[in-house]
Image (cartoon, rainbow, N blue to C red; front, top):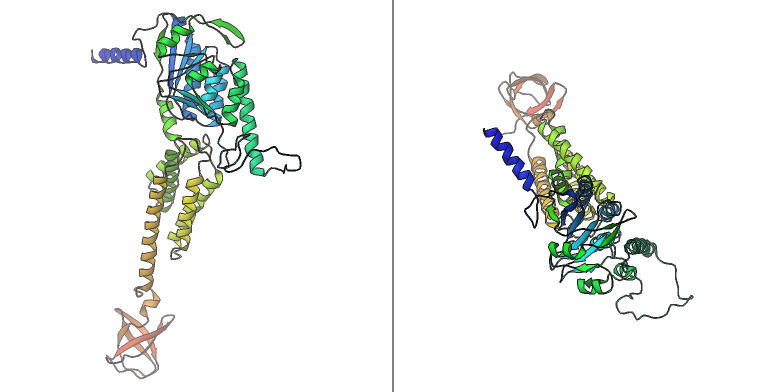
Length: 460
């Protein structure tokens, strides 16, 4: 009975999961619209969610996919994969910038232009699609002079060869211009504005976007969107299709555990922590063979970090500096250099952590607070190691052969050159430069093999 109730509960939860706007269950697959939400920066987890949802929509014969979007931008590779999935989708895709106050900036503008239907809510904006250069600065849009300069015609004599950095930035801009113009022309939208969005980082409101032909319509909500596109003809995989959205039922798809996990581990801050935990876990396992737990946890975390990094724009120079810093700090522990190796390791690790993620896209940067915390903890640990090393260096020797030098003992017999002495509760053969009486206190001045060099102890 309990099992039956549990199964019924699971079935009910799965049936009700993710439905939006209307609680009814779709009875006709052709009248189903799946709603996908993008409410953050576009990255690997977003790409996985959108591409898999489009595949699910095709399998379920959905009539429409609505991407409700509010994003500041995202990673180039993830954005292009999403656009490829939209262009090849057998289900029409309507991208809806909503709710009011939302934006489709940078990568969001590309996705909006690539969709079969482009819609926006009132008081939203789109644009600012200039790519962020991998060399750490935004390429200067064409026709925009530097601060303090006046625009003037450039003669052939004044033209100089571009610096390598400028040439690379221009290549990135030109590639993005060609890409966004192609998307706009494919959907019959304003390609000239699309180019300005890249070259001049132009951003416009929803009303202006509708006026100049960047989007198809302005809608208050999803219900209004469905009402306005009813009967509209769109081209899907080179075939015209008439949308029948009257009375269409919507169902909201939520990211599953795989998307959630991918979203967590591909966060640069989490991936960075996984890398550190993985490396230190393996180091602890090396120091304590057979401990098992540090090795298992370290291996799992390291593999997850490497999986995340291969999907993120990683600067491998930064990754190398982090590993070098860890090696130097380990070297400081193994062979104390009174801070030289350790300080160098902390500096290398901090610099590597800052430049590790090679993008300025919002939401894809390692927390500076986390970097500062790890650097502070590492510095304090190294200061402790140096303090213990200096303290140990200044302490007297308490074991080994060197500990016998200066030790006091007693002569077991009287002798002028060689005899037996008692030092540190042990019987030793000794030689002396001066005559020693029986039971006289002696002091060890040296050691030669198993023979002590002694002299009569000076009376204090």
